[in-house]
Image 1 (tube, helix red, strand yellow):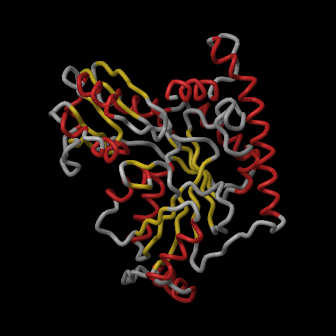
Image 2 (cartoon, rainbow, N blue to C red):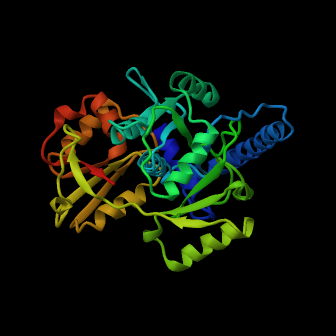
Image 3 (cartoon, rainbow, N blue to C red):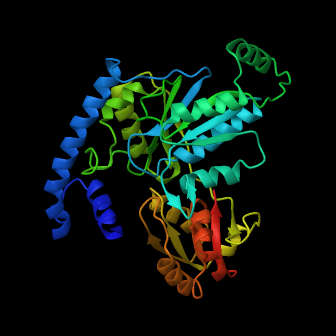
Length: 363
């Protein structure tokens, strides 16, 4: 199954298949049909919401949606974390609503949820996990209450005058993680994240391509953020900007990049190991994220002598057999994991193989 996912991913980011392997070419017709059916289903679902045949819920506090048009590698989760921390620093308690992606030994919610919990631990940020986000939001709003609109107006007046605002447990804002296609909740701000390394893939809808929606959906966005901007050329960036503004001329475009901060031990997430530890070293990068290329390039930029990679599909659930093989490799090479996988690796006992060559990368 993992091999098939990799093949489908390679097809999704290849525009011309003339020189592709036979397996890739044989799958293209089936993926094309599946993409057509997906597109029809998408149009029907969108129409049902447009004509109010499916209900849209309006929550009593502002809702910020952080989403993307293509699968994985767009910097969505770090943006959710950034906005959450900004709101906390500004005196508001945010509620992050996310859906269940994976299930690992009794924990529903996935690696991204655990990463958010770890990074935001000790603060007032609340995280609600569930496919029905309106119902999840209702549970949290019933439990903690919410800041009323007049209080929010007072908050912004005070904030503009740089006066102190005492943070309350009451929820002041809701952040929809991966919310662009979650049409059952109304939102006040739509942020679309784009992977600058390859924002559109081959331009087709899933599963033939990486697009969750046609590019026309850019018209709905209030803000566009191009991620990995430091890894692309100026011409590539101009092409992306022109494509975005071709659908919505007035949309503000911002830029983000992934910056390695330090390494930490698999066994101790609070440890700090300087990036200099990778200088002139041979490193094996192990990842299960949407854009492994960016992760590998960030390691190369630390000054590592040689960098190899072991890529798995996004949200891949590591099993004991795989970690056993990795454990053998890390006797020979320093290994860098993306921090997203810390919880899942420890859940299956990877920490028992810990030595000073196995690190997680903090971004």
